Length: 254
Image (cartoon, rainbow, N blue to C red; front, side, top):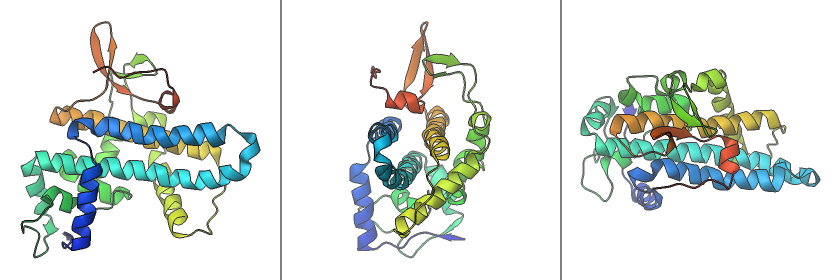
């Protein structure tokens, strides 16, 4: 049985700091896009397009994995807190599967949903699936990557269907390998992964697409705001590609 983290002054301070940087539930989608845009744009404009900076490419290549996983972890951790703040029944079902610490229900400066988020490692597929199990009825990532999110806007057009698995049938392996490389980069400064541009391009696409597809289904379930694409008087949820994230010629209209 998974244990709930014991409250300490250090943990409370960390959770309060995370809360202070977290935006409202209505902004959870755009927050991920902005975080992704800032680092993706830097990587592409400064390094990937400059053949004279191969030495910087090797350094940036390593750090890009840290960024990709950081955006992923932040998104799924924040969404976890949002939905467990909104749905008390969901929280109670999760609590029934966990072993509370003695001080779990003591009054403090942090919410139960925030404390629960520290019981899971969102950089691990198995942990993430367990955290979201009750939200989706099991196999959360497998489900959203296999389920059709269409019709939706993609590349300025309306796609009748959009299935992550149809685009990247190896998404699971790509995510796990990205997690593994990130772990080695963070904990071993001597580690030098071989630069594989084809792999990192697939990884950045998957780490951009999966949170957006998750957004589509979660927003639908909880009736939350999301970015939409307007065509012929109809509105469709929009999914950004990497090339669109890098573009500067689009605007969001409230």
